[in-house]
Length: 104
Image (tube, rainbow, N blue to C red; front, side):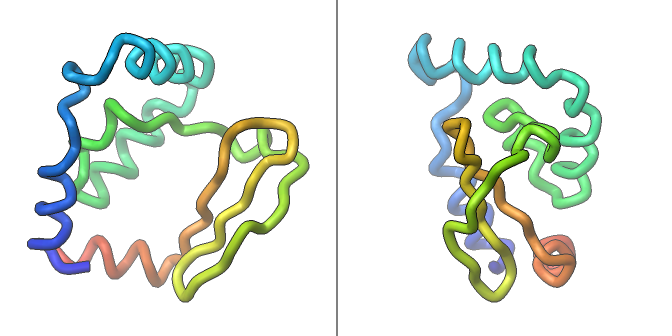
């Protein structure tokens, strides 16, 4: 993805402060539940030059996804759905991470 595309998509995000109260409360509750991943999330988003996504995302430990099924697979990632939770996890290949990092 080109840098201009990335910036365009980021500009479409509603500011976190403008989310409705239910959405904000849900995200903040998840961040509190899995606070031990906050530093790792912060570092990963900074490495990818997208720190503005941090308010919206939660780093959920992979151990939480004990029983999962593969939903789909593309050229750069696999998406899994945990059978006992409402979450999905995306496993990106190192190739994709390098592409995102080098395309600023």
